[in-house]
Image 1: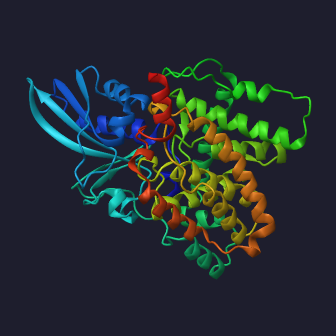
Image 2: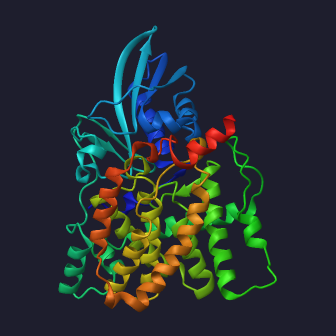
Image 3: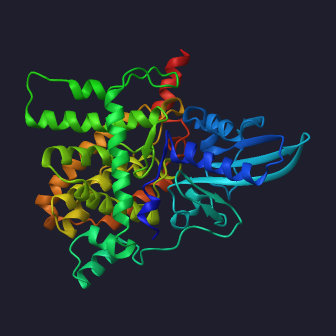
Length: 429
């Protein structure tokens, strides 16, 4: 497995695959063609279906400016070898095509482990990572960062930890990544906290035309007559999750955890734990390390891409990461950490990705809040019931992959099914 640095990437929303990835691809292509007097970008699949809502066309034009750029939203079927987030970048000189490059914005998928029917087969090409979304150029040599972890399943990790008398996943992370990982995770946490603070301070309408009101500040400032502890906990967690998700929807700076669309879940539960339990930033970083391993395992053995496996891959993974992080902070053992992650994922199986109008707003923002609360519940269950479980995290991860493979394409970030379809039908009446 790669470094957990690949899970936590800082950038502007609203989408790691539809905004960050195309931005990286455009920069790569622009630098390769400084003499071009025009560009054309053809978007396919999910990029074409939801590109406007995600701001794909906007970010492409911004990066390729001041060179005139034409964006084409293709309705054509992708070849069997193509990824659902595929684009062709074309450099023009004197009106003629000078060069063409096919790029796949892979988001958080680890394609070699996906069945052909979902990954669409094809050879794995070179990858370009770093801050923002990962992209792949089919046919080129893989240039991804080197493997950091030998183990590729939770069972393998648990066996290794027991053999080396390693008590926590955060210690396991430090062993493999080195002590410098803590400075990186501290920067991640500072950015997460900043996104919460900024989100809680803002009001108004989110861009995109749905007229979605920001709700984080309102949620945070409410004082119901019956302020029982359970209601207060829900209110705080939901407010934090809304704050980050709204920042993402407003093209603000966030940290993928594991994606832009699910970026509010992990910060929300960690912020709540820090505020209510007094955890230091250094202790929170331990939770981030554990969460990163869970995200890594899901990325390696299934997918963290909504275009590949539906929202279960994004929100489900985020919920698993958050539940595991809490279990680490509350000093639960490895079995309990695994159970927390497993419960969180299990009850998101089958969750579709059907953003209304292609915007990362409805139902995406609210899902972040619901998943954050679910993460708390999963962690609580793990404390009491670990010894009675029959399902491993590895099993539920494989089940998520299989479920994603069988999801109709309309429910994988195309806005052609589910809530998106029904909303559009009503709007046209």
